[in-house]
Image (cartoon, rainbow, N blue to C red; front, side, top):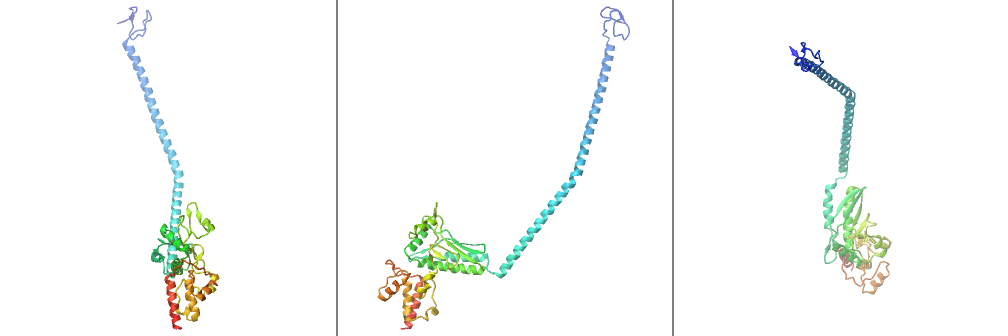
Length: 347
């Protein structure tokens, strides 16, 4: 029998409230039943939520997979097509490059067949140029290393690395009127240029001289110096020209002579090339004497005989030089001896 804890009245089996005083009972069986029902309800709700969440996750995953599948289905053909197009373009470019290379090789082979001289011969020409020296009587002057290139159908022969000491000595020769050593050297340079140009069936351009230096010929006019000067110094070429007609030593002195005065010489080229017997066989004894002495007269030699002195003073190109000591270039010496030998045969 159960009793009310407040009024002590009898409680019926399973009663929740006392019938006498209305006090809530503390019946453990009832409490346990209530709690059990509550726990069961909560468990059911939890199980339902878990099932719902699982189903929701599955549905979302399925939806994502469907979207990806549709996207791949729509995009993949385009990507494949673009990749195939890119590969096709790349293949076409490679084919064109190969064709161009083949054409260049064939053109080179054709040029080599017509012109046996190729770039392998260039070092031998460079070596010959670098062996050429300007002899001033006591020493030989080098213009340094040479370079040979070809651009726009023109062979370029350049020497732009003259030592400053040699450059000043070359300009000193020019200032003193000793042009012959420079001219002899220049003619040899031009002859090599002719060889290269003929082998390549083209023209040539020669430039020798340092850029932006302090060295310069003192006999040049102020106008010349201003024209060839800059903030870094002067750039007077020792030798420059693109043909024998305009090849000049230090701007103004023509290597192959002044054509305007050529008719005043018996032998206009006797200072720049070796004469042959045919060049002098037709000359009289008097003409041979003048031809021999005009080699000296070009240097300003002051003649002791009245006949020769008066003859050369009448020539527009003759300029007496009291400092000239009678030295001649190799070519000039050869020609003097050749003319002397002919004079002796006519005695």
